[in-house]
Amino acid sequence: MTKMESRESLSRFASFTCDLEDEPLSEQDLHAIQAIEAQFQSSPPSKRPLDPSQDHCVPGTSTPACDSSRRIRRRLPKSLVALQHPLPFSLSPCQGYSKMRLPIMKFAGKIMYSKTANGVEKAALELLNGLDAKKKNMEQIVLGLDIEWRPSFRRGVPNGKVAVMQICDDTDRCHVLHIIHSGIPPSLKLLLEDPTILKAGVGIGGDARKFFKDYEISIKGVEDLSFLAKQKLVGDIQSFGLTSLTEKLLSKQLKKPSKIRLGNWEALPLSEQQLDYAAIDAYVSWYLYQVIKELPDHQLAAVEGRVEDIKQQ
Image (tube, rainbow, N blue to C red; front, side):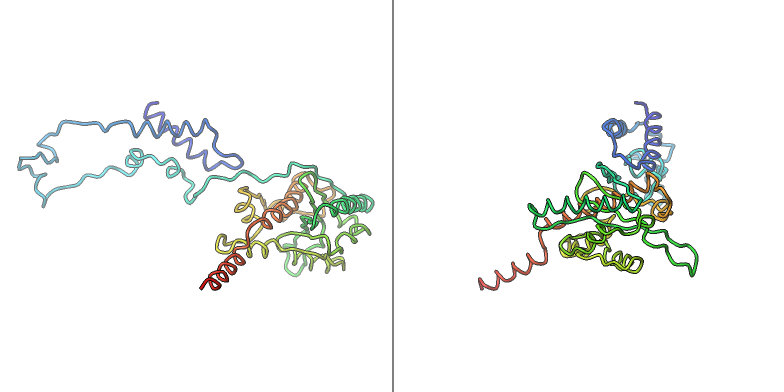
């Protein structure tokens, strides 16, 4: 690989890292980077014979360049210095880009979309029957739950009612219920008001208050993942939102495009992008609960350790 080809490869790589969204670097990309580094690191600096008439200091001579009071230090342009010591990511125009993109969080199961009263009733009844079967083998039944509504961008105009409720109870399927059009049928009301069925989500207490305001139905048995994570991850994380928890605990990137998040959730039917967004949120909430509950309680461990120290004194 010639130096010209290496420079072109570095330039191409720099632009590539800015556009990288969904996938980590491939093996081919990594080999190309290593080849570029080896090219510059293995190329010895060119040597030219020194000319005493020029601005060089020749040992044992009294040339002006050897006079410390008149010595001039020549410096290479920054661009050449960078090429002599190549750091692939430092050449990227994306300043402040400190880490590789994490893989995108996706839901691989089936999305069950219900938009009529009969459809939502059937979905809720199916959930209840499935949960009853699980109660025999599980101490605690957990649902990942989230809601969406149409935001208002006009002063004095309130946000829309809760339009969509998404519920996930395993890795195989998630229900997306278009309740703005279906209403709240009896089986869904029974499911939401059952305190023995835990509903997990980030900020789910606020969602429950909005839901009660819009439909006068209480969502009982809620578990806020932010509060739960604070008990487990003291000092390890600064933000306890759904996105940051997904990155910290699942090593995945949770996409939250504003075009979808702040879109029209009352539109009938929902778009494929909206269905994916809704299902992933509910799935991540369910998944994070399983992970967080398995983490050791740092605060409790610290207290117990201190008690043992006191007993031994």
